Image 1 (cartoon, rainbow, N blue to C red):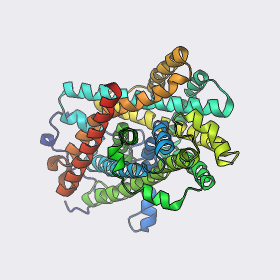
Image 2 (image 1 turned 45 degrees about the vertical axis):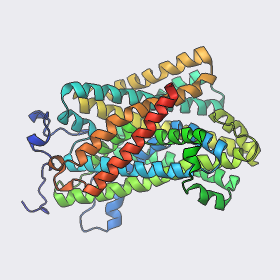
Image 3 (image 1 turned 90 degrees about the vertical axis):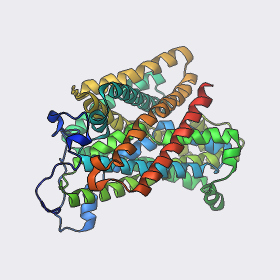
Image 4 (image 1 turned 180 degrees about the vertical axis):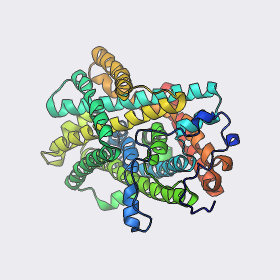
Amino acid sequence: MPQDSQAPAPPFSSKKSAWRFAKTADADGQSLPEVFASIKLPAANTSWIKRFLAFVGPGYMVSVGYMDPGNWATDLQGGAQFGYTLLAVILLSNLMAILLQALSARLGIATGRDLAQACRDHFPPAINIVLWLACELSIIACDLAEVIGTAIALQLLFGIPILGGAIISVLDAFFVLFLMNRGFRYLEAFIIALLSIIAICFGAQMIAAAPPLAQLVKGFIPSPEIITNSQMLYIAIGIVGATVMPHNLYLHSSIVQTRAFEHTLSGRKEAIRWATWDSTIALMLALFINAAILIVAAAAFHTTGHQNVAEIEDAYRLLSPVLGLGIASTLFAVALLAAGTNSTVTGTLAGQIIMEGFLRLKIPHWMQRLLTRGLAIIPVVMVTALYGNKGIGNLLMLSQVILSIQLPFAVIPLILFVSDNQKMGELVISRKTAILAWSVASIILVLNFKLLYDTFF
């Protein structure tokens, strides 16, 4: 059949030999079947901008995980203690994330499988059970950060106790399901709206902080001090560990399949191109927001005698008086609430993708969401009861450590699959890209292992 034929073609990786443990019944299995190929694309003869806009959305949903409340603590601490020096680390970790998310989108489009399905069809059952348990742990850890972030924001804005805010956060599960039932585009629009709120809030704070341009530019240039200063290195590793979210790799490989692209070689190539542009642009927004958190912290705290600011509550209390802008603290809390609420979407969808992909298990979405959120709320309730609000910050950091532990279980299989010619066919990544991907994976894993070692030993 000619490559540009309009007739649907099976995934290039559909050969039984390519996927050792694939079952015949799974041949037509779809990731997120309720929204699979639900977004129609403009005709092929329309302008490139209309074609591109039809693919815009999944990248912004993925970018949410790169600016969730877990990132805030490391960015605040890095800016307060070391000024603008660690901006280079934020830039580097964001570039790594751009590459990995592009590979994730390529896997989903080229094979018709999300990362969880690919693992199920490649690895033996015993390994898949381990991978599934690790994934579920990361979803709970991610949800834990969302619960804490939302609860802290509600406390700062409305005086609601942390425990009450954690319980209120359960309600967002139903709102997410409501949007899903309306259509996937509604969900994407909701995400982009909240991301816009976060960007506006930090844009206003950046203007108020008025950071010196020369120091900003210098901060994006890597400094040897990052390696030689042990305290700076520890926070730098924390920034990298909090930036690359393992569950996002599962999520992205699935939601790129919501577009009804042509299942031909040319159709898949176009889908990969636009999906890569979508995620790259969206992750540049995440770079701006993460950098803005650090820049505001550096301008407000590093040169004003508040270098020890590390807690979100302390930053909220000090921002307005230090910057001389009465609304600065409120904008900070509103952005935190938007970030915490936004991140629930990734947890909801990633949880469904992982459970259905690894176990072929389908349960009602509301039940799955409440189960995951319930497991995340339990440690918040226990820590609040035993240690009060002081223990919440430590719990937030612990959630990021758990995510770091899970990272190898997502990154290594992803690169294995996209560099496998049998699975990817003509859409396999080049040798140069594979070398770059393995180099990035090695850097991330080494830094995360060091973070874990320093945390526990």
